[in-house]
Image (cartoon, rainbow, N blue to C red; front, top):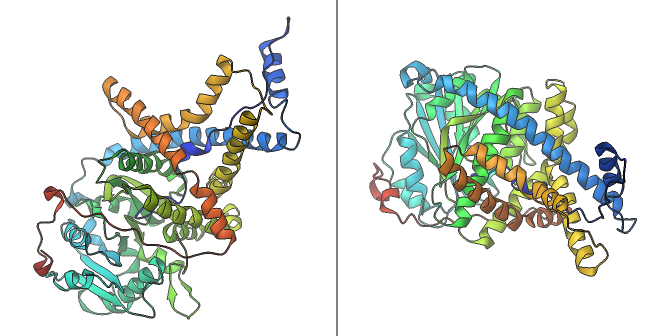
Length: 491
């Protein structure tokens, strides 16, 4: 998601327990009167201090539904517009106008690095450089990279004390090398930065060989970044299948829905950035080293995407180019990874004011930016009401009458957004519809399973803890997954 968006899956924010009582319509009351009376007495019986908390949560839930509906309409339109480009060939695409600079940050990636580099060598573009940043690895990563026999590949080795400071610092090193060496000498000397596409690929990434298709987005000089659709290639367990659904929903609904405003977010894996856009957000770190990625950002992708939008660049989501990555098959590393992503979402709240006052965006787009940035707050608040509801129900403080209406509302608030998202992301016939509904409920269970990371991340942020732990890769066990290679000693 690579980093996925640094938020918990959207369906997890839309549940709150209606813990109050329900009153029946009095004789002569109209349906409107009945609804008004129902809302007036919605939280009767709860402690007075809890009622405002529930009302705020209900407003947030309804706003979530409204946001989802708007994004679905926009995503449908963007999907329809994308159909016209399906038959475009590489020769027609104009990809040769660009220099494609693939950057692979690598720290102890001996398991997957050969696979990732091999697949980049197979990407069908005319002008290509591959910069692999060995960020102080102490396993066989350096040995494997040293055995690569490909003129397109350059290995940048970082050593202590500058190594292992974070992904942002490694990417900034590659950005500086790209300007100083790649564009400063040799075949690509003097190449226009606006025609250089910097593509971030994690060491477990498998980029689509037809990645040139994103070039159509960069034909618009206002576009600074394009995000590929992320998939999970080792989806062999319920946990990894759910992660694949998570990325599918986010890319197909939330990312595609924001394309019309030019505010699709960047992900850590498979993000394509125009070099001139990166240059426009470059800042100096505490040591005076300049680079576009800000140091100590746990979701550097989300941070830089938002800053490019603030600078006036548009961003897009590609639905015809994908990047596959490994999912996590165990809960402990999954919680650790998603805690880091969720804390990154708390970190970018420092961009809240500048994002919603961005005059380059329309009013609706700025409202969407506000809602997007407030996602961790919304999740924390709504989740707190669920916990309170459980407490009130188990202690007998609240005794709702569980009518059909109550159960329907409970289910709708809990499940509807997730189901709609999965069905939109995965289309098919009647049989596929049934399968997708079942998968949607797996996805919903998954969103609640990882929901606690919102609070863990919040407490870490409040405590000033910015440490991070690298995600461990799984061995590539399927023979079909192994790279055939031009990689010499890496075989």
